[in-house]
Image 1 (cartoon, rainbow, N blue to C red):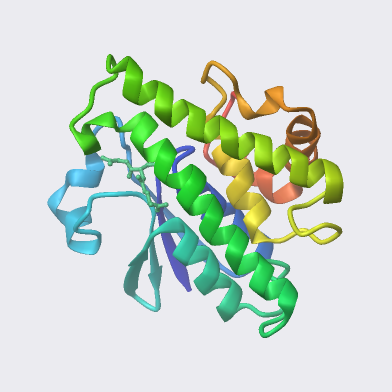
Image 2: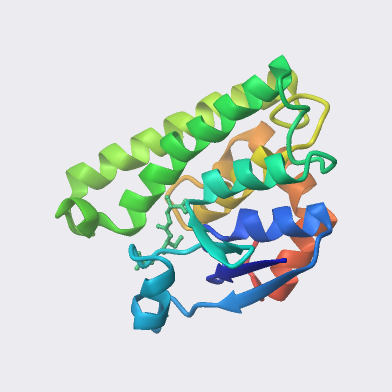
Length: 209
Ligand SMILES: N[C@@H](CCC(=O)N[C@@H](CS)C(=O)NCC(=O)O)C(=O)O
């Protein structure tokens, strides 16, 4: 049994969808980020960094959304989350998971939390640089999907598609959202129609996107 501590639309979203894809029983515990519940003593006991998500696995807390995707894929080899262990497709999948987390996850963190690096929303130069890095990632991913889609691994859906969809959603209010790129737009339409995505959007009451 799993318990996912999630925030609406937060980095927990891909893990929420992954749990639904696997089809195992899980519980949800909502953390209201706007109310600062991630800094409550009870939550900090589970995740001293005060970040979302935390996944309880057999009662033990684990964090970092990309790591949780890897852990779930390993624990549920029959799921569609990752290609079979030991294959080259699995190697490509690891590479994608880590590069999405580094190229998009880290930059989005800085975009939404500029104070992490002592910057501010008004620091145009730093924000411009972060935006450029995020847009460069969209450019690469758009080319990849146009050449070898419809999923990141080609023909087969996997958990990295849930990660990418989550990151794309986070760009919806940016000057150039990911859906400005044509192959990414098509990909978003396909992923948003997926039952697991529809389910998490409904449960997390995500009205936009
Ligand atoms: N690298 C982490 C980032 C987690 C993260 O920054 N989560 C955000 C929500 S998307 C959060 O907890 N924000 C609240 C805060 O930092 O106070 C992951 O992917 O799990």
